[in-house]
Image (cartoon, rainbow, N blue to C red; front, top):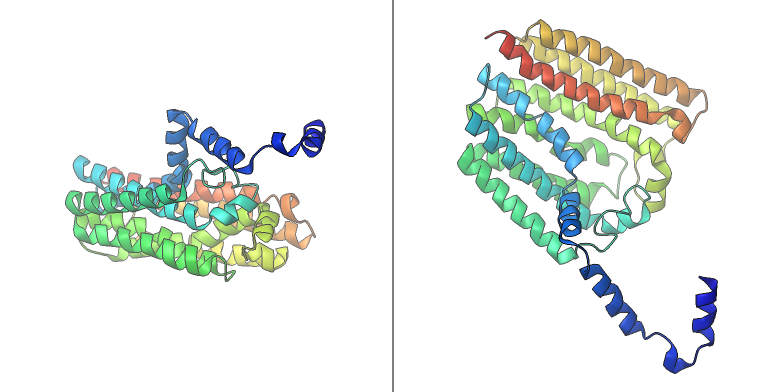
Length: 328
């Protein structure tokens, strides 16, 4: 590398690389991406892992609303519409956060920081996904579900991504509201109305989101700090954050137990809610103990709570799907 630099510095002006030509060559290199690379880049923009989590909180609620198996066509339309809606919102988030993603080690290899997808193309892609999602949900289920999905997306893009994320440490608390809509969408797709059951689950996801996200923020605190994103672990000390994690975790488990009488759930849901919730709270307590002991960043082992929070939510909603089937 140093030899090449010396050569360029001492070469005659006529032999030095033309900046315009260099830029053209870089552009041509980008266009040499294989079709597989291009498809992979567009899929990556949708953040598939986040979509999986959102769908986990949609389909089981349809079992609960149906008191058993939901209609196959209705389930397919709801899941497809929900997938496309979440994908569209995530694409817009990637566009808005492109400058942040470029500064963070965890996200710098996303398609926009790597210039694999033009910004304008990503915007068009996001709009198309959002429009198709609304039509699929509107005609495949009902327009209440379609409107709820649209409201969730608009909230995620304009309130969380554009307004809250860079301005306040409470971004996760209030911005997480967008991720609470899938239970409502799953329920209304079956019943055509909002009920107490999905509202309880809305609150479960609402209180679950902060400890889940703050655990990840602990792990990548330096990344968020470098990018200027005021996540709670960036602006407050580890013990203070761990206390907040514990408070929201206890609230999550407590509200999950409210569904037991409200939806007249059976022993399957009750058992999972109690046992999985107990482990969730235990992980939060252990995180607080490590924080109070003076451990920081990776030594806090925050990913233990992060991974268990995913497991907890998956088990809880799996129980929501299975419980009605037991009573058939």
